[in-house]
Length: 129
Image 1 (spheres, rainbow, N blue to C red):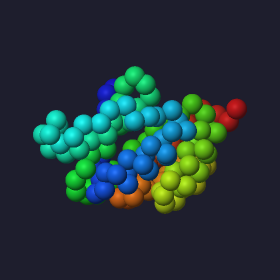
Image 2: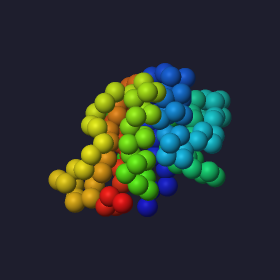
Image 3: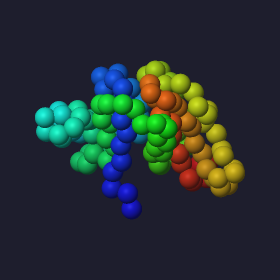
Image 4: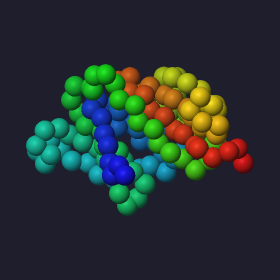
């Protein structure tokens, strides 16, 4: 089981706001922030569903190749809301909400590129309600 993950971005202020807005519909909040003087390497922002941050964004040179992170959500409606909100927050379309039967019968996901080109996804594995 994965406990937490993260990625590196070129402009932490821009990405901090993008992720704050994009992840809000799926229940994620900024739960922690640490300056480089604490981490020893970079300023970081931790997002998660309270009480624990499990997705970290750090300042620096963006990962090459860009990272793909998928957030599992409870229903297809949240995938749709994530997609619309992430686009409104400055993300770029990388796959509109829909069923991806090549993954499995009920795989419903949406993909958005963040300001550095990281592929951010919301996915629901349950059949339509």
